[in-house]
Length: 143
Length: 81
Image (cartoon, rainbow over all chains, first blue to last red; front, side):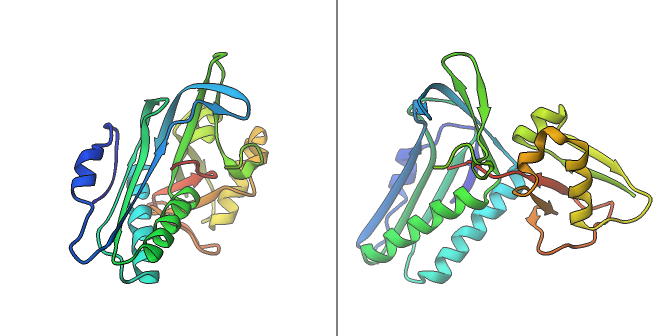
């Protein structure tokens, strides 16, 4: 399952489908909404997505991971967009792998490439009423 | 040629529209279209060198020529995850 959705991510369903009988390691990553950025209090976020391209770029990222680590089996990636509160999961990734080393490497590759190439943008809403779009390479907000 | 370019995030907010339309007498390549956009929107200068053009929902490589039927989008640095 690779998808983007406006709905809250159904984490129990992803966990239930994450394992594979040939795999001794299931790696999970949940990206969650943080309550601060550069010293400012964040009250909520909104993610905007270029939906069709975001979907196809996520598929490409997973295909590249499978080429680099051919042993990995079940891979699931769900990215949520729209408004969400502090603490919500905005992205959930699972990777099942026969052994942990390639699983960790593949998972890290997937999240790093998503943060580089999948057209989804974060807008932060601060306690003082101000808002900011985050465009990391502009020089304002490296993560 | 008439080009319709999808805008997102800060680009959309500053331009005040989800689409930027550009009319050109001659067919343009990707770089020329991007130059025209950023020349028109000086407040977005900081994003000029880091924004990519997507053609038909894929990042373009090099400087392809564009057709008026292409689905075009300006992709400023992304911040998903």
